[in-house]
Length: 246
Image (cartoon, rainbow, N blue to C red):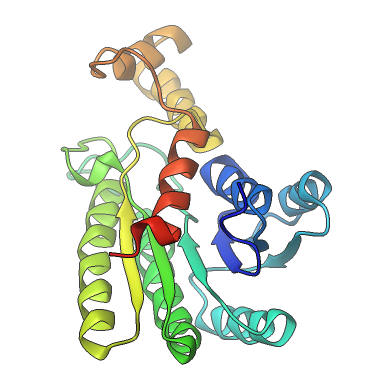
C-alpha cells in the first residue's frame, strides 16, 4: 500500500519503541518521514533501516525554539507538513512515584515532555498545515490516562492531559476551518524500552522477579497478551489517512 506518497510526516520519539515503528510504517507506505528525537544514536539506526525516506532531526520537544526550527526546516526541505505524530514521552526520571512521595523535579519533567511537548508540536504544526487547509495530528496518550496509576502519578496525569488537549486542538481547527484533524491513540501495555525500564524499577523497588513484574500487567489484560508497537502504528496510519477524513 502507498497511502502516503507525496506526503510528509513528522514523528517525535522516532528513535525507539512506538515512535520508531510509526516512522518505519509511514516510510513503508511512501511518506517522507522527519524522524525526531533527542537520541541521536537511535536516529542513526532509524536512518540505516529506512534509508533516504527519512530525515533525522534531533529535537527536544519541551523546547519551543527547537520546534520552531524543526517546523521551519521541514517546510524548507519538503515544502509541506501533512502529518504530525506526537509520540515522544518520558516517565518520571526518579523512578516510581506515588502521590504522597512524588518529587517535583520528576513531575515537572513528565509534564514538560508529555504535555508541553505535545502542546508545542500542535501549536507550530497547525501554523504550517493550515496553509494547505489539510493535515492530521495524532497524539499518543496511554491507558494510564484512563485508570489510576498510584506508582506513576505524574505519568498518568500527563497522559490524561494529552487526551484533553487533543480534543481542544480538534475543536479549534474545526472551528477555524483549517481542515486539520486531531486524534489521540491510547495504547494499552506495549512492550517497549520504556516499559522494560518500568518493569525493572518494579523489580528493584517492590522486590519482584522479572516474571512477576510482567505478570502483574499481563493478568489485567482480558486477551492475555501485550500489544506490539506495530498495533499502535496501524492505528496511527489509519487516523492519518484519507480513510479517516471525517
